[in-house]
Length: 152
Ligand code: SF4
Ligand code: SF4
Ligand code: SF4
Image 1 (spheres, rainbow, N blue to C red):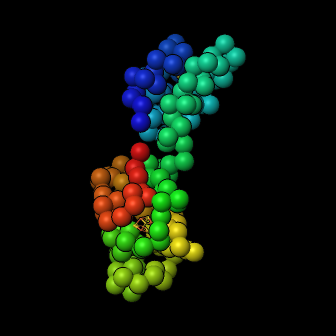
Image 2: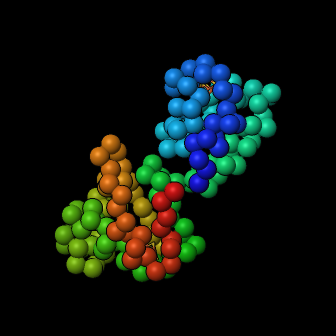
């Protein structure tokens, strides 16, 4: 995970505000937290900034597939054990007849479901890490035996 300063050094540093942020530093914070994309800075799309743009993209590559919460599910590591399904408090609250008692979820409101031996994440806005009042929940990460769930 890069730092804000690492990202900032490859931005144009003109504070032109064309990205909708008041400074390039604020834009660096926004791309790091996935609120903005690099392409929302018009100057960096110019050919003269190609090297800087390539560098920014390579720095952000580890987070490219992440959900809005920063969640990445590494499907190649998932064994489909279902531990995350029964551990997620949102799944338990939304599916008292299924996930809460260790069975497969029975409705569409849950975050995790195991389908064909691999976990699928959906309803990501329900995650306790999402939005202004987010909390750093680790309930799905801790019981995963293979490290298949990561927050970046
Ligand atoms: S558009 Fe690009 S150069 Fe202008 S303030 Fe935003 S990040 Fe900086
Ligand atoms: S971080 Fe917490 S709320 Fe979010 S998916 Fe994992 S267990 Fe569920
Ligand atoms: S706990 Fe880990 S290995 Fe088990 S289903 Fe969830 S992501 Fe896959």
